[in-house]
Length: 479
Image (cartoon, rainbow, N blue to C red; front, side, top):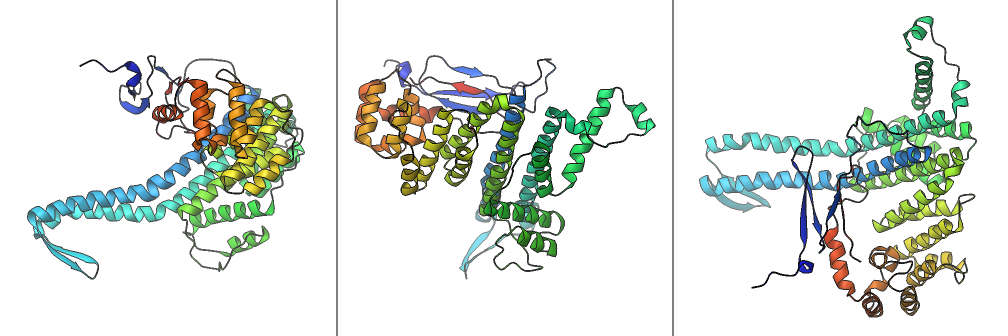
């Protein structure tokens, strides 16, 4: 019996941390060379002294970290609100069932309840497990409110860091501050820079003690920016923040401040009344994450573009990439909001990025089921003079299979669109299903689409995309 060819194998890579403990695993496609990059997580410290981060990297990192934190909350919703309690119940009742079978007796079902008997001494053996399950279920009922409080806190931390960066980039804000130090305080500072740092922190603390509306107003005033949000998203944002306050201070029970602030923000409160007890469902939490994402990232992008004009293209490209990732994760409504924002921004850095906003926006509507809106967006531009990669994307969104396959052959195997792009880009989601597309793909690249789709799926790490702490990344070339 001969050994199977190397190309017929799937490789498993088991990743360990620096202490040698098991960290993660990835499945890898058939390749003779596996490259694993060791990427340091943000929580790791380093004694290496390097150049200070550029303004571009500082803003990029800040917004990226905020976006990643929201992604972690989103994943936690399904993991802890559903799987955690379910797993604990299954573990407990599995143990109980084995005990009944070995030492007790099933009595049958009576009115949707199952009855059984156990010797008293055996019941004492599982009392601790029963108390543990009860405690866990009680904690599970509190967890949604705790997640909401934590989510709002993550937004506050992000805004605080953004304000700190504003003061760093615009030192005249610090120069104009009226912070006074006593002689004793001045003597405690090791240097003038320490005094400036203390004054800067004082500004940040003063702003962050105000409500979130005033924090945004401070940013807008200091930078002479317009940071207005539409009434719908602002109303939701205020309601989420006010609900957070209720769960932090009164267990979710409605007070007058909640009603007054929500009404002032034109929030639709339906039938909410004083002293009603609010809930935080998984659906509500997911929407809260999207609202914080939209408000926070929009503010971050506007500030980045205003403060560091020479990095405007980097900011615009970051927003385009964020919209694309939202589409890939099927968050179409949020993608629409972010890409509409990008399309409407003044002085987008170049035409290519502006067209990326438009193409991905049209695709977000198309994949969400609004083909009419998608067509309206695309028809506003004459694409005939555009680069071939835009032409094929527009054709794919329009489901023009003939045009897509014709352009695929024109681009060829080594053109502007690589083989991997046909597999991954969401614009090809529908046309990939057609026999014409599959046939053209095999004709151009010499392998079947199905084969490469399997390999692409095999190389994906569990929930690695948009993770807060990026672990080691496998690199595989399927081309």
